[in-house]
Image (cartoon, rainbow, N blue to C red; front, top):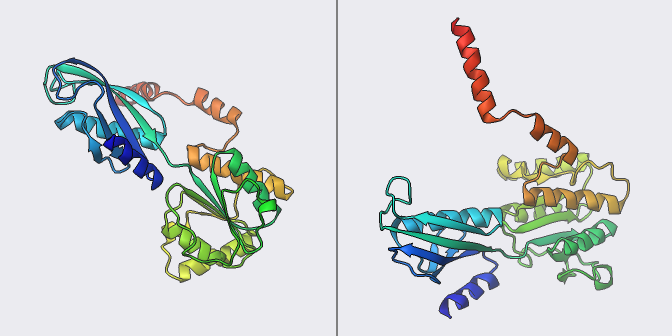
Amino acid sequence: MELYSKAAELAAQRRPFAIATVVRVEGSSSARRGSKALIDSQGRVVMGWVGGGCAESAVRSEALRCIRSEKPELITLDMQDEILGVGMPCGGMMDVYIEPVLPQPGLVIAGHGRIAETLARLGHLMNFAVTVHDPSAARENFPDAHRIIDKDFDVAEISFSPSTYVVIATLHKNDHLWLQKALEGEAAYVALIASAHRSHLVLDYLLAEGVAPEKVERVWAPAGLDLGAAGPEEIALSIMSQIVAVKRGGSAVALKQARQRIEVEPTRKEVAATDKVIRQCDLK
């Protein structure tokens, strides 16, 4: 029960982690079927036991991969072979099921208006915990918002993290402060709704204030994908499409083009074989 209490604590803190469970043991193993461990986003065992030495190291490594991919995995640890297995010849085999537990991503919308309202609705549909921060924000305009902060910008009101996606639609009020705060918090996505001219002015200001160029480069400004959007709803759709692409690691190109590229691109073996033929021809 203590392990589950710790898992609930990590979830309440919105910290990503993985639960590793031994589901099969064959032969000799220090862990038993049903053994569990909690592994945090740094690859550390927070609590529990799934074996020692290289077995634990392998589970930790796979847990990190599962957290990053957001997908569970069933892995097999071969402890019979010191060379080809996990590096500890205990004489057994072990299957471990690793399940990532991830906090609900947060979508923070600074500002109000039709774009912000549509973004909040789309964010809710995409399973984001939506927070709207604007003194003019009203519940009737944001019925799907998880939280509404209807006051002027206060840096203490919002916390940002790598699981936070931020869209700034303030119509230029305090947008530089929002950007600084979001970048400091390592938000996964930071976008500014503004014209190209206004975007350049704000980003140049951040650079002049000493914000690192590599951080400023992370700002999507102007925000969204090039969909040819003509109205606030379409602009909101282009921004949400970009958020999904960033979250899922998508290319944001047309699926038809992506598939054609996969079909046309040669495999690594084909490239190696071609290079070998070229080298042989060169030698002749």
